[in-house]
Length: 373
Image (cartoon, rainbow, N blue to C red; front, side, top):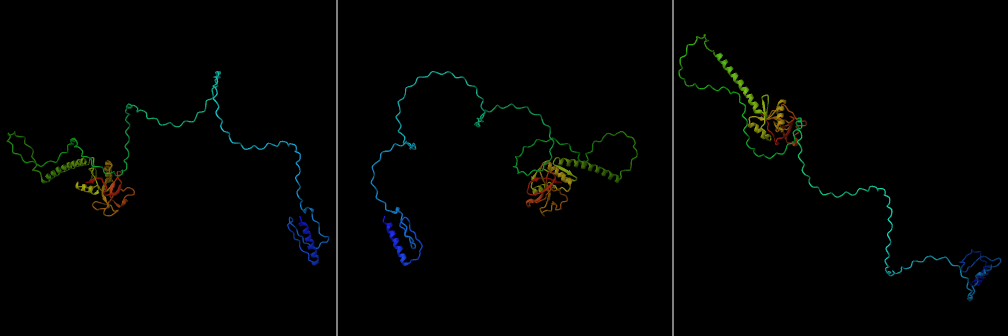
């Protein structure tokens, strides 16, 4: 390469120029060492250093020499890695069928093996389908009748149940059988004196009787009156006895007698107004008990028929002020606990339960008739 001598010459010229112009010392700048390098420095004391001979120009390449003698064969190298599998070959043609072989001789029978242990019980199988119903069995013979049980004790009277729906009117029943003849009534009062009969035939003359004692001059008016009063008293007692018997016959079994009152029912049912009208037509009025004894008689009839009755008591005129039918305030009451409560604002009449307790009720409800005489 010619670049090296040229650079040396340039450096020398720059060095001589620096001595003649007295250029002050400057900093060193370096260039890429792979190219040319220009070094600027102060005046050299002992001259510039020489260059390395390796920077010289490479000479031309020589001609190729003759081939040398072949060397000895080297030892075998290690086996190479297995190459990739080749593609599968085509299926070969089927060979010819071979000849059937001879039948072999039968072998000896083996010794029977020992009996194995019983296996474990397996799981239960699924439930089977429902079978078809079997044929109907023959009807069994009728059993012997059981012995009659002891008669139970009568139960306590229950509280009245709720009012049932009104039933349809039943068909008219047939005429009943003629009843037995009743007991002979007591003797009636003596009838009026009959008319004087026609005179009879004149009888034969009798024998003369003995002479009698001297009699009184005749009955006085006072004695005659006493006699008549005594006869009337006897007739009155007979009448009272007869009337008492008639009363008992009348009330049995549909009524009760308390003091001078008779409580009677005919079994008829209706609302308050209808019951009140029926009692008036019979010459009485709706039952209006004024003490515990009369209320007990009403209770007995209610229990006997197992039906509540309406009393002749209401607060139709003034709410909360219960009065008899004649307008007087009630003097006795036997209300159920919590009553009267005027439920729904329509309860103005009074009914009696089988317990004897009172309850206010709507007057339009139907109840058993009970009149007092």
